[in-house]
Image (cartoon, rainbow, N blue to C red; front, side, top):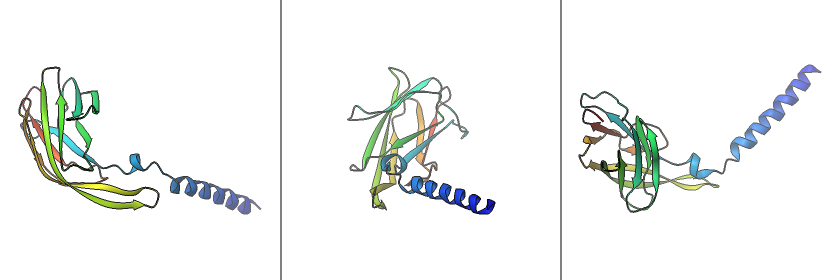
Length: 158
């Protein structure tokens, strides 16, 4: 009798779990790919930026990161329709850098509920040099993985 009750409870629990797991239709949140920018000093050591930093998308009123304190990396979305994005990094009111990212958009099928998502392939990256010393692509494939895509080298003191 105990085994029957235990089997019934486990069966109901498994059915409920599968029902929740398979009915996730929040496609934008669970299927968005982000380019990962990680910060380094001139010696190649991972660092955090000092102070608060904001990031906006050029040509829009979108604030992608709003006053994040001492960030170690940025996770930024790339455009699905354009092949070049410009991000403005605001260190202070007067100190900003621009990051220019060229990419190819690669559609991929997600599911019947979610339709098609977008991966990206990084083709080029450059920046202004107010605080950024240099910038380079490490992994050009931007997918759902949280792998480092771009290294940003900062001069000492950032």
